[in-house]
Every structure is written in structure tokens, then in C-alpha cells.
Image 1 (spheres, rainbow, N blue to C red):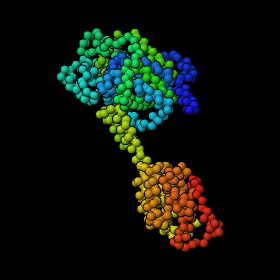
Image 2: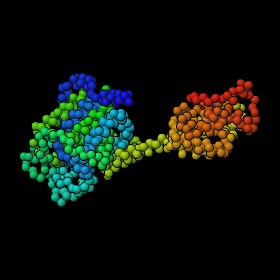
Image 3: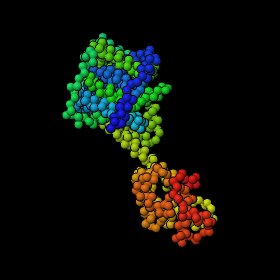
Length: 584
């Protein structure tokens, strides 16, 4: 008991910030301050836009960027990660708001945060790396489409129609716009998106998002364009911490959404941290500590009215490109946003919703990496299928189903590819010391099969029926040194084939069985069915000599003259589990 508690304590201690983090923040404070300020300028319109898109309002997005951004910076596992509200999370939150209301979203965020902390303590971070790249690219493409469709009502200046599916809502918004067009709002949204996309190509370091939003806000105020609604009143400061949303009675109904939010937060945060590692030299994130930091961030954000947060790939990339070297930059980003919340709330509240819609439209476009999509689609048909299915499922259903479908299809296709590597080939007997006549006689009664690749559930049933239908011989030798893995299903299928051969009077033996494969074979009784001499042999020549001796004892072959040494060695052929020789 004490050992378990001590181990848990060591794990928690390893997840906490240390002296190294403080030392790194002292290395290049000026660069980190500049990077943090730049990221804050980029993050402001995104935080506002994602807050509005989530259904909890712009203030929720700002609260998330400040609270979650600061905590994830301190406790996270990456020196360069920037966290806050993201488009992917918004996609998941919209149906939760529709079904459970704002308090349900806050409750889901807190539950997801607790789950992330538990995953960190269990050291589950490394397993997130096994998500296939086509699944990631597929749901990124699907998310980009969903984010763009979510902006259609605000971009067109119409009230958001009722409905949960973004395709339905976007179509209804287009119908409303056709009846009562608002060209001012549409033009403003397209202008902001165009400035961001075209400007970033020419001057990628310039924060065109804030410039475009500021310009649009000034234009609307000076021209008195009432047709373009603003964000609305924002509180001057963060909301007071509150746990009024806690309701134990709804825990059961919110468990599934919380699992989805936790899974998305883990996946997106670790993916973003990996991107940051790839953009720098010598940076490596700690996946378990990153989960821990994101968990604490998501526990705290709902207390201040914020939505669930994740690591943000776009903001993290800006952070790296502007020269950030430590987590001080992310802390500065959160502090600057907090200062804006406390001092500039009246000005921020005047930002047109259409301008924010333009920011998110441009963000959706920039999320789609055309070159990466082409590479995935052109790699293999399986990769292309997984990518398309994940994207379509994201768009038609939701992100959780998309990830499940993507992983399931990718898993099935991967198993099929691995299963195709399994082979069963009849191989000629080695002449060895036999004469041509003796070799021909032996070949009439002994057949050798070489098993290659994995002997597991996805391959065994299509592989081993061929073995059971072996020719009419007296002895079958299984050469198993090239078998890469054996599971219970594969062992049972092999047992079935051996039993069928035994019932036909055919003796089966084996050579080159690896030590790691003995356990499943022995557990299902395969080793007990290998009845020739010692049953299994280290090399194929040993198995052939034992088979020849068996045929001589049975009177099938004439007893060949052998040396006294060979005759003495024959009964003592021992079971030696060694690597099979090159000819074995």
C-alpha cells in the first residue's frame, strides 16, 4: 500500500513544474515578451470568434484564453505550446450547448479536465501518438469545413436559424439571405478574410487578423452601419469564480460528451505540441505533463465561465515563428489578453460579428494543408479512404464519430495489410548428405512448409486450411523460424490443421519455434500434438533426420547404413530452441 502511494506521489511530482522551467524563462526574456505580445494580438479575434461560435459568447472565449492559457503554460509539457479555445473544440461544443445549455458545457469541461489529469497520472500520453496521420488530416479537413459553415449566418448578417446540423443551419441561413440580402455584412466578412489570406502570403509575420478586425470596426462605427450587429456588451474583467453550474444529477448524461471533449483535448494538444517540436531544434514535449497541464486548465476555465480548451496549432506556430524560447511567451500572451479584458472591453464589444466571421473563415481555409492532403490521398488507397471517411463523417455527424470511424477503418485496413504478409509455402527438402535416389524417396513421404509473417486472428483462417489439405505424405515439417507473432486465434487454427493431419495418419513436427511463441502454442495444446520424437527441433535438418528415422521404423523406407555416431544420436535428438540455421 505504501509503495503504491509512494509511486503515485512520484508520478504527481514528476508532472509539476521544476527549476528547469524557471531557468529557461530567464534565457531570452525580450524575445519571449515580443512573441507573447504578437500571439496575443493574433489570439484576440480567434478567442472572441470561437467563444461566439461555441454558443457561450465572446466573454467565454476570452476567459478561456486567459485562464486556460496561463495554467497550460505553467503546467503543460511543452515550452512553446499556446492553449485556448479552438475551432475543433467549438465543433464538439455546439451540440452540447443545444442539448444541455451553457451550464452543461461548463460541467463537461470540468469533467474532461479531471479525465485528462487521470490520463496524465496513468501515463497515457504516449498512446495518443498512435493515431494514424490520415485520421488527423481527415478530421482537420472536416473541422475546417464545419467551422466555415458555422460562420455563414454571421457572415451573411442573418439570425442564426434553428438546427443542430451545420449543413442544415448554413442552408437555412442562405435561404434567409436570399430573401433579405445583407450585402454589407457579407462584404465585410469577405473583405476581412481576403485581407488575412492575401496579407499573410506577402507578410506572414504581420498580424493581419487584428488589423482587419480593427479596420472593419472603425469603418462600421464611422459609417453608422446598423445592418452589421456587434458582439455586444462585454464585462470589464473576468467573471467571478463560481461553481453554480455543478449538478451531480446530470453526471451520467454528460459522461459521453465529457469523454469526447477529453479525447479531443488530448489529441489536439499533443498534436500541436508535436508540431512545435518539429519547428524547432532540441525541443521535446512531455506528453504526460502536457495532459496534466491541459487537465488543470480545463478544470479551472469553467469556474470562470470559460469553454474547454486545447493546445492551438495556429497560435503555437505563430509563437515559434516569432522567436519564443520558453513558456514565458505563453504566459505573456495570457497576461496581455487579461489586460485587454480589463481595460478595453467597451471597445472590443463593438467589433462586428461579420468581421469575426471573416476571421474564422480565413482560419478555416488556412487549416487545410493542400499539399499534405495530396500526399495522404496519393500514398495508398487505404489512406485516401480513411481520410475521406473521417472528413465526411465529421461534416455529416460529429467529430467523435469521425475519430471512431477513422480509427476503426484504419485499424481494419492495417490488419488486412499485415495479414497479407502471412504466407505458407511448400519448400523442397535440403539434399544434405542424401544421395539423389534417397532424396527423391524422402520427398515422396516428407513435405516441408515454411510459415512466414504473423500467425494471428486476421491471417490464420485464410492461411492454415491450405496446410490441412496437404498432399498424401507420412510426415509434415513446419518451418516456423520466420513466424513474427502468434496469438491465441492463430495457435488454435494451427492446432485444428495439425489435428486434421493427425487424423489422416500424418505425423507433424516443427523446427525453429521461437521462445516467445511457445507460450500460446503450448497453452492451446499445439506442442503436445507434435508427436515425432521430441516433437519440435531447433533446425530443419534435425527434423528431417527424425522424420527419416520414423519412416524407417515404420518400414516405409529401407534402413540406410549409418555410422554408429548417427544411430546413437537419433534417439537423443533434443528439443533445442535456438535460432534456425540459414537453411532451416
